Length: 249
Figure 1 (tube, helix red, strand yellow):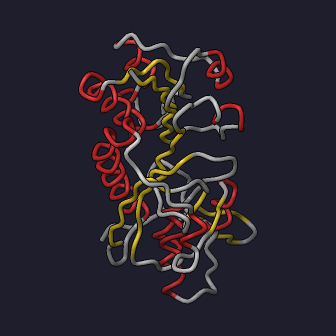
Figure 2: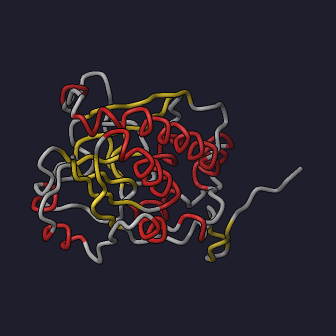
């Protein structure tokens, strides 16, 4: 029986863990540990430690505790907040994978939804890839692509990606456990796909709206960064930072 460790947070992490728990018997594997930062931004309904404890799965106190587990075949990371080091990745005898809510190699790192809108992309995607040292650069196992709606807001693109990501994960649980996949190195795709890496700290810069921009650019940057629950896009007026929000008709 394969031994699995799950690393994750946020609603997508909660529901992927729930899906794994429901499929343990069907696909002959056991979840032997869970790691999470238990992000509460999205509400108490997505309590990963409580879900794990409900099913008698141990919640590990730190990433390094992973190294103390006797046998780990597969590591599954879903929106986990820490970057795994070489020794953590090597703990998985079969494979360590990550569900990255963006197309690869186009958008590695953070804020991918915002940059896709800023870049005027018409397609987006979600990817399950092998974890290697670095940021989202491991070989691709599975992916799903879909069109970006016209005049799309960042929340809409996030919701679409969330839906497709959960579908992608559910569709391929059995293949992941059984090792029934082909690894496609990302460098083999660079002739036909662009690549960018973005960092969390960049979001404040792209939220700054300059009124000297043309109307289309202002509107596009606003759509790309006006995410409910987060600081809004802003402009500078009289040397002061002024938040912007959408006025309903």
